[in-house]
Image (cartoon, rainbow, N blue to C red; front, top):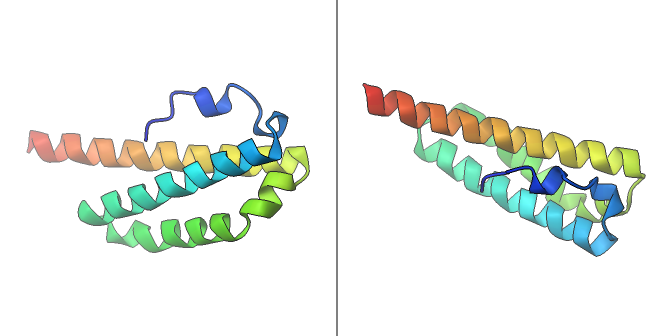
Length: 100
């Protein structure tokens, strides 16, 4: 999944609880795919941390989606940054492997 900014155009706290919950579910699915991609790419040391973060995110989906707006926005924004960073790591790894 590529984040082109659409998830951050509106503050997540401005969304309805059900929409925020769907966004969190979507982010969790993206983390799961990234963990798989990192593992397949041999970056196994990063996988346990991603899986732990994903587990906590899934366990706390309801709390995050109903939480204080500042808290909710911070968690969702941090998750988006984590996903973007992981995607960049995978993309750079593919480029490096292609060059060699």
